[in-house]
Length: 348
Image (cartoon, rainbow, N blue to C red; front, side):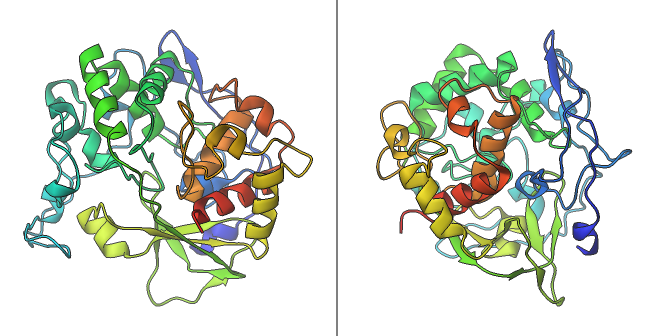
């Protein structure tokens, strides 16, 4: 990750929704742009790869980054607590990915378990896992209220939920997946994931340094072996607690370690609990334990990258949220970082 500290730029790129298409528009990438929240190692520069065009008639897989197929090494791997074995490619098969722990969740609806291959709709379980825990680069959907999930699917379809960073393609993929689901399938997905409880999975460590990392195509950060740590600076570096299990086997029970600047938790607690004169208390809407209240989703224990990404998207206007827009109005990038760090650390 030697280039992670390269000079910041102010490149004008973003996305806009026109007649069902996700296209480029001008959004200024200021010096405080949280590249790390999008799983990116540095600022956007002219000529950098951005998400493919995603017109209304696109198949979802056409909206993402498509790399060369990974040759299957044929090695059967396993995880603690299961007798099942899968190769790397079996674990990642888009239309029936590995389900390591079938007893951890109810019977999956077909669209969750297998997707719709004829339409290029990959299984929900591929990114969000059968248990809905998800990872830093996508979304944590277990335990979200049914009606909230349905609302968010419609927001993706209507262009009301997009990524502020034009390099993040999987948000566009999600929009196209949602548009290919029938009403019955949407309800099945919402009922399924809302029936499970989210399990907080982030260990937050305040530090002056962090591991050097590399980033996968969709933004999973992985530590680089046998290299020294580097100064963390004013950002968060989030990695799996067991990188091999997460990257190679898609371990749905895996967690994350978030390295955050020293002092982040105290500052974040003040902002979350009191508003610190800049915003309102998060618990008013999300519940005093931040595990959700009525139709408002829980936020406690979600990855810091995910929380920061949502706050930033709302701040930039690419994710519409009438309730949250006034909340972020006076928050700086640093404020959002502190909030994300503290929320990720819950429950304490």
